[in-house]
Amino acid sequence: MVVNFINEGSVTDVQGFEAGATYAGMKTYAKDKYDLGIIWSDLPCVSAGVFTTNKVISPSTSVSRDNVLKGNVQAVTVNSGIANAGVGNAGKLDAEEVIELTANKLNIKSENVAFLSTGIIGVELPMALIRTALQKIEFQPNSGQLYAKAMMTTDTKPKECSVTVSTNGREFKIGGVCKGTGMIHPNMATMLAVVTTDAPIDQKLLQDIVKHTADESFNMISVDGDMSTNDSYIILSNGAAGGEIITYESPEHEDIQNSIKEVVQYLAKEMVRDGEGATKLFQVTIENANNIEEARDAARTISSSSLVKTAVHGNDPNWGRLLASLGSSKAEVDESKLSVYINDICILEDGLPIPFFKDAIIQQMVDSEITFRINLNLGESSASAWGCNLSEEYVHFNSAYTT
Image (tube, rainbow, N blue to C red):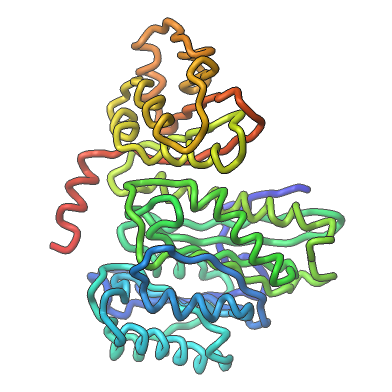
C-alpha cells in the first residue's frame, strides 16, 4: 500500500463530490465568512457514521444519525453558529425541514441527506434566513475549503486533507474535513467530521471502519474534558473509482481502513493543535499494556489530565503528574516495571528515576510538539492519544463565550 497526502488537499478532491457554501447570518458577519454549506455526490453513496454519546443530543444529530445508519446518505448540509440543541421539538422540526430543503435542491430523497449543526446551545435556527440562503449555494468541484469554513466556530483555520491510495493494483482517493477546538474529549468531541472516498465499500464494512478509525483518532484526543451535544463523524463512499466492491474478504480491506485512519488521525491532531488558546500539541504513547483497551484508557487519561496540560503549558518536566494520572486509569500498572520518556529521553527506567539535567528537559518542552512515552512492560498492546496545553487564553475565551 502507498498513501500520499495531496498538497493543500480538500474533501472535494474525491471524484464525484462537490460542495458549496454561503453566509446565512448565524455568525457575526465578516468578509469571506460562511455559516451554511452542502457537500454531496451526484452518484449514490454508501454511508456510515458514529455520533455523540451525550444524553443531551441535538435534533440535527439524532435525525442525521437515523439517515446515515440507513446506509444511503449522499449529501451533508452543515451550519455553524447555532447548535440547534436545547430548543425542544422545534429543533427536530427545523432539522427535518433543512434536510427536506436540501433534498429538493439536489433532487434526491430526504433519507439521502444528513444535517450537522454546531454553535451555541439553546438558540433556535433562523429558518427564514436558512431557507433563503440554502437556495443561493452554488456547487463547484474544488470548493471543499468553503465547506470547511462553513463549519468553523472558534476554529482559527479550516481543517481538511486528502490522500491518494494505491493498493492491490487499484487506486482510490480519500478526503476529509472537520471542525472543533473546544469541548473536545474522548468519546467524540464538539467536532463535526465528514470523510469522502471513491472506493466502493460494502456498507457493513464501512460502518466497522468508521467505528475502528474513530477509536484510533477522534476518540483519542482531548482539549478540555467536555463532551458536546452534536458530535458526528460520517463517511460517504460513492464507488466512483470503479471495480469490485470491497468487503471483509477483499485484499484491499485493511489497506482502505488504514488509509482512512491516516486521514482522520491527521484531522484529529489538527483539532488539538488548534485547541482554544492552545500553543502546543502533545502525544501520549502507552507501550506494552496488557490489552488495547487498557492502553487506550491510560493514554486518554493522561492526555486529558489538567495537571499534565498545565505542566506542558509551563514547560515543567514534572513526570510525577504522568505517573499519578496513569495510576488513576483502568490499566494495570507495576511501578517496578515502568519506563518513562520525554521526547525519547528516558527519565524513569524499571521504576527508578534516571538523573537528568532539568534545564535540558525544559528546553525540550519548549517545542510546539512534545511526546510522552510510557512503557508498562506488561503485555504487547500500544496506543497513542493527543492533547494540548491548557492556557490562560483558554480560560479567558471560555469565560465569555456568549458575552
